[in-house]
Image 1 (cartoon, one colour):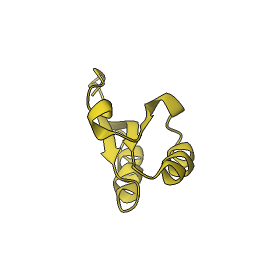
Image 2 (cartoon, rainbow, N blue to C red):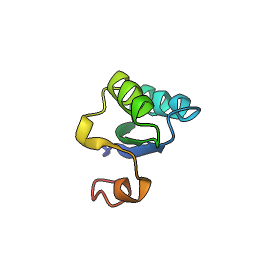
Image 3 (cartoon, rainbow, N blue to C red):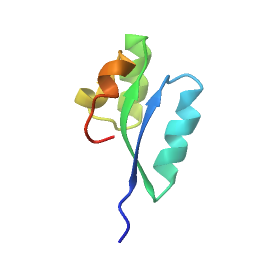
Length: 68
């Protein structure tokens, strides 16, 4: 079995389409999201099922994840 490609999305405006695309792809796994708007981050991160600890306001912090 091939390992899934782990993905993160920066920006949950137009980026929601990318996030949903990763979720629809059986070869990919959406593991983190980032947005500077805290309300949009929580609403859309939760809607996507991304755990709160994997929702970031600073993309630099998100990109430090060893999982990516």
